[in-house]
Length: 314
Image (cartoon, rainbow, N blue to C red; front, top):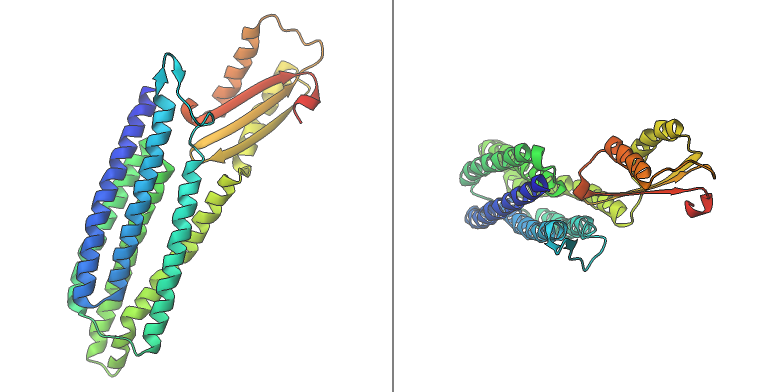
């Protein structure tokens, strides 16, 4: 429990740091984007503000989950939601993805209209310098969060770290495109310069949308409590030798994953006259199964039932 509490606090601190840096980056993006007249940098600023808002929402969910898990009153947990707040995690991720898809699609349409209208020129030199500095900051944040998350093991931190690294690569792509724009200024293809910024923005949108759709798909699976095949297989592989060793007739499993929580229900079919000397012997089997499945107790909802009638398991 102490380890879980420490990890929860570390998760909150990382998310707060990410929010602070994101807001500073977003403000800088808007200012530089307006100064250089770069739509792609301005969009990156709006994207960063949106990301900060979603990270703040994630932080609130983390606090709810942490408080629900750790809060104890006279030896009993205070719970308005008796199954916890785990289901908020995929809901936040799905909402984040939907908003991101809508905003990105809108910017994609704007970039197309800008190209049709003849494009515009930007201050490439300033934009390149800023984008290099911003990309370095993004990579530092992403790698730092990844290193910290090796111990925390949070889906939110993993997603946030991925977002920082992706943002870093996107900024490097902007740097490359703007350097090409600088080179094109003095060439026979100088007319392309007016379209570089809009083309870069289109490229960013086309890169972001598939990733957001994938995240929304995964979150939707969890919202609808669809069974993850790998978790289902893991539980079944654990149970097969245990069922044979203890002389049980069969078993039924029901598993799902919601956010960081794994919900596992196991029904063991025992012979009608199976010898049970003490209840503690059944608890020992439960402990054996729990250890074999593994996972943190705070993030694993494990129910193991014994019955001689299949109708209670189906």
